[in-house]
Length: 81
Image (cartoon, rainbow, N blue to C red; front, side):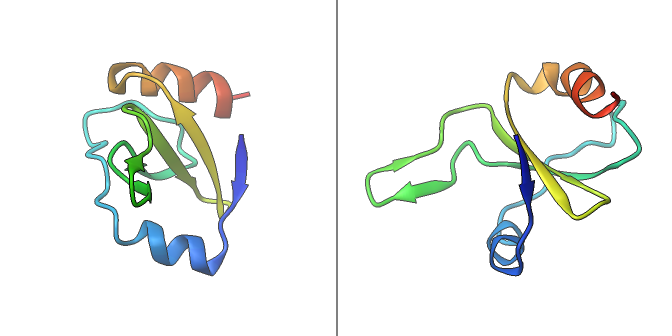
């Protein structure tokens, strides 16, 4: 699912630490990845484990749920097309 990154969303995402992607082989269009696994969605809960948003050079984002070890391969398939 591709998302348009509004200024409000970017402001919220900037408060979430970046996932360390230095050892991952990713498509060149990937700027950073945010781990949303513990991001609170309301007063009683958070998003599921292994939930990420991938920020791209074109100003859009891609929501993805998978194991951290699967990110590289899955993103290459989705974005590399």
